[in-house]
Length: 209
Image (cartoon, rainbow, N blue to C red):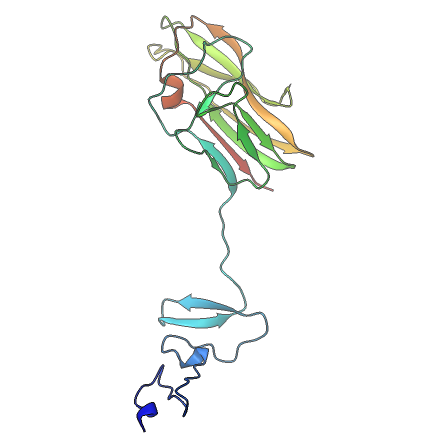
């Protein structure tokens, strides 16, 4: 009869033209005898989809990252006591659930405030200011709700061949939501803002627990 001329996954239609296809009828599926709550997982070696008791999981650590190396002029003068801004041409990378990134002065694409939920964190950051001579430098520190949590970072003029910058690496615990900022603590021989911070400045915050 005409209704038997077409098959789907080797299954014939019934007299009404309907075809019943089970998952295992597909040529690249071999589930065997699955158990309750099993997942379907692709196995490259056999080229098949098979039943598995465990699902694929992501190992990516939740994080915030700004530091693309852009040619954008820093939005304000380098003055002691100000929080440092970091540049992102598009939406900054932020995969930390409940975290927000903002600009306290509403500078477009420049961010200085990182609001984090409770948790354990690792932070790594670098700032680069503009200097009127090779003797110029800045110091800066990480603060949580206004309290310093790590030794100062140190950045020098590009013409200074006798000293190396000191980046900040720190770990900290938050028992509740808090604002994290990077504050200028010393500014020496500053020049008008250029693209140095957008090119070389970065901030990485990882939530590790």
